[in-house]
Structure formats: C-alpha cells, structure tokens
Length: 155
Image (cartoon, rainbow, N blue to C red; front, side):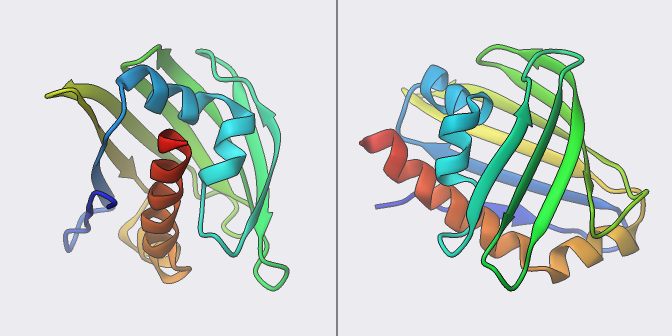
C-alpha cells in the first residue's frame, strides 16, 4: 500500500509544503530524484509522458523537461542551486505556461526508522502564481507521481 502524501497550502502565503515517506532507503529515493531516466518513469500522473531533455543534477546545473497527455502539454526549466547527495536539493522552477514566474523548491531527504521522508517546500513569486499552479491539477500529479515512485522503488 502506498504511503499518504500531505500537501499543505496555507492562505495568504505563496508556499506549498509536501511531506511523503517511502519504504526505501534514502539513497534509492534520492537517486530517483536526480537520475533523469528514473525521473521520467515516475514524475507526474500516469496519463502523461515525460521527456527529460536536460537534467544536470549538480550545484549550478540546469534542468528542462516536457510532459503532457497530448491535450495538456507542460514544460519547465530551472537551475540546481544546491545538490547534497542523499540529503538536499534546492532548485528553481519556471513553467513555460507562466513565464517570468520563477519559484524555488527545497527538498530534504531524511532516514526515519529505516524509511525515507522527503519534505519539499516550494516558494512561488506570489499567492496568485501559486494558485495558478494549483489550478492545473498539480496536487493530483504530485500524489500520483509519488505512487508511481513507490512502484518503481519496490520493483
């Protein structure tokens, strides 16, 4: 059974906080976040395909991907500001559908009782920008993507 994903969106602040645990070691969960071939297998909902065109997961590296289900294309890009193996990823994100709306995401990876807990804190440039992202179904994509990651990790 999949672990629950907790997504917190408080009124009046441009933040989205996500917490999720995985029944796998930190090294495996971290690798699935930094290896572009693995990322393409789990990121987003099942109905989408993911094309990772650039993913240089080192401090100062950049990323770009395109995804969608044919009717709802989505593409984005950003820069990795800090990558600490098995511990931390800090990166910017900007989606082509919302140009000039650059956000920053901090994801920590920690071992808790033999499992991995990830905590992601996303900061958008405004509450309106955050709400636009949520309106696209982002939460659904995050939850289903993490379910897909569970399946990948257990395989």
